Length: 284
Image 1 (cartoon, helix red, strand yellow):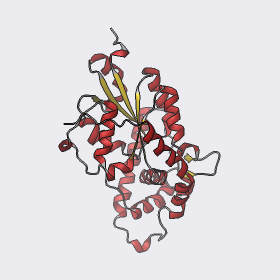
Image 2 (cartoon, rainbow, N blue to C red; image 1 turned 90 degrees about the horizontal axis):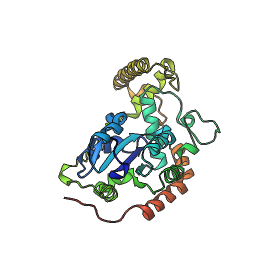
Image 3 (cartoon, rainbow, N blue to C red; image 1 turned 45 degrees about the vertical axis):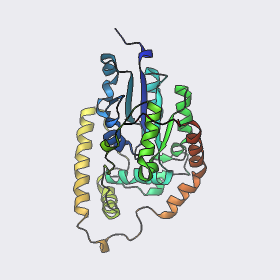
Image 4 (tube, helix red, strand yellow; image 1 turned 30 degrees about the horizontal axis):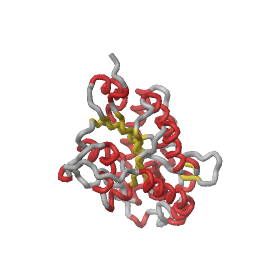
């Protein structure tokens, strides 16, 4: 017999990628008490898990990035009163981090083409895809409630305040001595990524086109990643004098993105101040 949806509440973390999703999934969410966390590797089976269990609160995390609308539609169809958690990162740092991951995985286009503010048909990221307030409005429309809006930068400056806000929103608890504040990933150097970008031009397409067969796609992707890691590792041995001295991402390009989205960033902070819960969490 199916559970009555009114018996439980779901909190859904919609990860935007490169905005602390991996850190939250590995270091924070599993340590919360008073709520059942469904790890990302069990996302496909979350409905069955909820049916088989009797918890009153669930926390589900799934990265959306390019497929934000699709993820929201999927989840609102299952639980339209779910409460949504959204972590934002300032636009310039966010898209720069996405670009570094793109290069690490074999991409080769320049940053200005990767994050294209001007084209009506961008190849990867366009102006409209990088705005955050439309994401918040899409959440409100589908779930008829305000999401919890948190900021990546706060994890560096005051991480426990961010966790407190998360707990106030979900009703969960945590123990500070159980939280590991160390970084999850070590980043590749600019020089390694420059070499990867140069080499990728000759080995891979700028935008990978996955094959239709899922198994073959996984094999293809795995082989590509192995090749990329080999190139990145070898990149440590290349003398800096042989590399292009220009920056991996020109500072002027990042300044333009930061300026262009300054109002969007300000409005998101105002939204969080207005709608985020202010009550203290249940903490032990």
